[in-house]
Image (cartoon, rainbow over all chains, first blue to last red; front, side, top):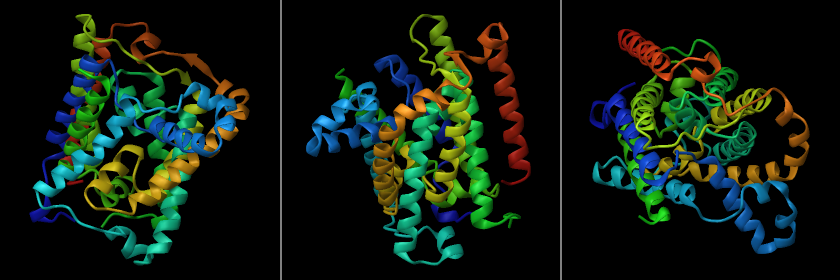
Length: 174
Length: 175
């Protein structure tokens, strides 16, 4: 599984440092990391451009006002941070279909696109229902010992493992 | 510092570390769900333990405020399971797909488009959810130490020791 040339940093070290990033955000911005609300706000901004009346009547867009905020910039920053890390370590790789997916389901791009799109629709629905994703609940909720965060984190993995079993079958260990 | 600039800088640092930890990739995310490669679990738990100790120390000093999300059992259980199903299909989560795109895994674009679509659907059905799932098992903004009625440090120590034992086990099993 492990390729020696593309090992990156130890996940313990990178993870611990990212814990430092959580602390930095809490101290300097009074914010905790999260990502999923950004997709609601972006959708709201897109909808506002062609149906502003509709957006102004939807309760969820009144709760989550469609505008660019700290978290929106944070999510954009993730893209650039990863881009910088990938380019400076020559691990940037233009890839349409992940290796593991390709081995199991073939290298058809439309097939991967359809399932990934559907996965995105389902995942964000679940995240907004739970009021957080692996960042907002998984990291930020758990680090605060929030009951909500810990329940959500466990359920993310249970749901994920159930679906993975359907996709890849049992006995995945190689 | 400007709040938007702060968000961007925080995101860049976080994205950089996600890429260095190799946790952005579909193979790593599905590897964890298939219990064959626990890289993302190591990353997440390391992040949680460091920030847990740091944030609670600073909270005791009055330098940070906790922002605990309300516990609604129906929402977190049902929403969590639904998220998990979507996550296994996509192989990225809302934050990591942005980073995956940053290192060239452009199938993340389909996930981003799916999430924008899913968010629109969620906004449409939100009124129905407000009167159903979001009323099932409402406990408010509660933490584990509050629920147990004890100080947070014993809980933190138990979590960290449990985590270190898990790490040791994962390394022994070469996961």
